[in-house]
Length: 186
Image 1 (spheres, rainbow, N blue to C red):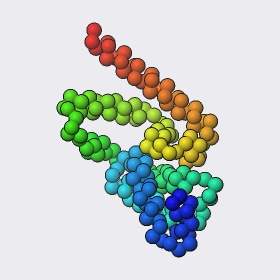
Image 2 (cartoon, rainbow, N blue to C red):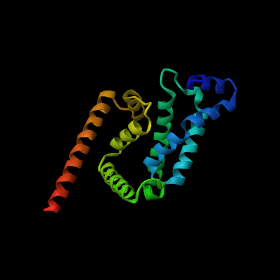
Image 3 (spheres, rainbow, N blue to C red):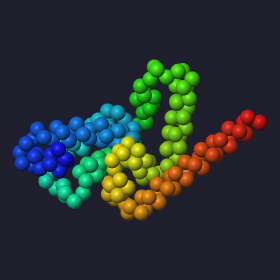
Image 4 (cartoon, helix red, strand yellow):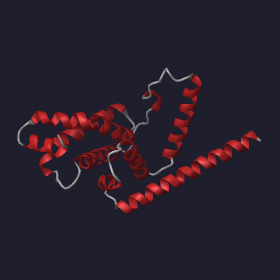
C-alpha cells in the first residue's frame, strides 16, 4: 500500500491502518527529532506527539505533496516549539546511544570513535539549518532535495547551494585537520 492509500483508509474509518504509518516512519522521525533535541526521552515524547498530531490532522494533508515531507514538517515544528518553550536542550553523550560491534577489532573501534568524534565536532560548527539539511539528506535516503526544501520551507536552489557549501566546509575542515596533525608530527 502506498502512503496515500493508507491515509485514505484511515480517513474512511479504518483506524488500524494508521499502524502502518507508525511502522514506516517512527524510527526515522525519532532519529530526526533526536538529532535536533539531543535528549532520548524528550525525543520519544516529541515523536509520539508528531504521530498524534499527524493522525488528528490527516484531513488537512494535501495529496500533491509527499506524505513523508508533511510528517517531517510536523516533526520540525514540534521540535522547534519545544526548543522555544524550554530555551535550552540537554546534551546527551552520543556514546550512550552507540552499540559496540564486537566483531570489530579494538583498533578499528578506537578509529571509529575518533572519526565519529571529528564528524560530530564538524557538525557542531554548522548552523541549525545546515544540521537539519544533513540529517534529512543522510538519514532519509528517499527524500529528494525538493522534499527537503519543502520540509525546511526554503527554496530548492537555496537548499542545493547550502548543501554544496556544507560539502566545501567539510572539505576545508578535513584539510585543516590534516594540516594541524602534520604540524604536530614535525
